[in-house]
Length: 472
Ligand code: UTP
Image 1 (tube, protein in one colour):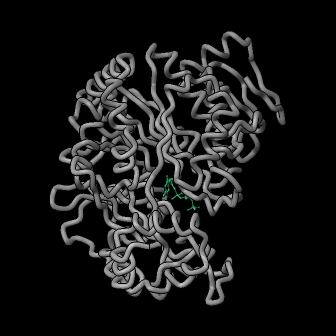
Image 2 (cartoon, protein in one colour):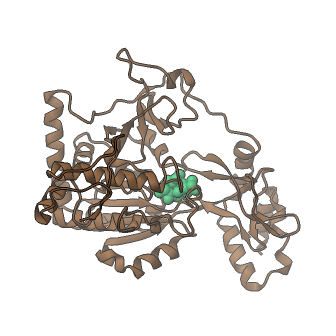
Image 3 (cartoon, rainbow, N blue to C red):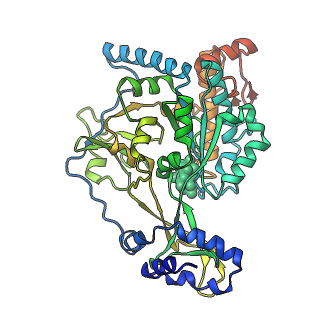
């Protein structure tokens, strides 16, 4: 190992990492040295002190106010006119091929407890099609509908990149052209033990974890994705998470409003169902939009109400964004971008004192992640649009219960049922108002309500019976 690197590691108080080096093969040593050389050692003692040995103080600005947003339904004629113009502009941008999709799929999906990239999780209520398949087919339909390619950028981590790409190849890219799908890999951060010492996952490897979805922005630059967007004339990025198959992969109104409002980074907001709902809160301080995590919003603000009884801080984030490519270019122009770190206490498999790999039962370490929403305060202009939860947000975080695969499938069926009702189909409901059937509409054919109506017309479907399982 080169002396300079060794010195940086020792100066950073992480000498224990060198303990097994004498026993490593030349190949192991080579790969370990490459890994160690990629770490910013100068930063490690400060990170350990600030985020691991101490819990970072959350300072909530004094001037925090709720962020303004465009309502789901236009409240006056001017807004109605604006929405019509936005719809038309969004369609125009899509037809001109100026919009791409970006799915962040680098997470580890620990809560779901699924072995493999989360995007390969089966979610179709009838077909069991996977999350990736859902998005791929929606994107194929969007390209067909707007007559222009909608390129798809998929962020993976070094841990799941190969498995993700192999999956797409095995599935022939779900009928998409390979040239329209661009995989890129996010950065990693070494995990800390609770004592501030970095953890080893083997004698020749640090315990590394993905650096959070905030890593997307720099990864777009470093991977050449931004260059590809420039070459392809793509100017707007429709950003969504891999675990939300309900999200419209491209939403003309959202994209159009982003454009008309000269926004650099836009967001969909959902009206929170209660003061403590686990969604980040859209707020403003010093003229800048920001998200304050649900756990950090002071109680008196969380429960504060408007005169009409509605929550003052009502806007919660489902992590659906449109970003201007030029904004990402600007933020990463120096080849660096440091968004704030957030601490997460996790169970991290790592070597114990005896050099044995141990998987702990309770959190034994700290992962540091950055979040994409921390780019909001860096934008000169932010546009927020209210979304309809039942139409856009069904996160698959857990195996069962709240925000689970089960609740997500139910929401997909419910949205499909609503679309069939629009097309004049009779739907069975249980006494408590749930759809009493399982319904799937192919995302390859149905991107929006109009597509659903056309599909039903073609199929001649008139009625669904109780307990029926229907796939169109
Ligand atoms: P989550 O915060 O839900 O994390 O990610 P997760 O890793 O998927 O799941 P848990 O917390 O381990 O159970 C939200 C979205 O951000 C992506 C995820 O893939 C998901 O689409 N993400 C998260 C990344 O792309 N990279 C990361 O480092 C973290």
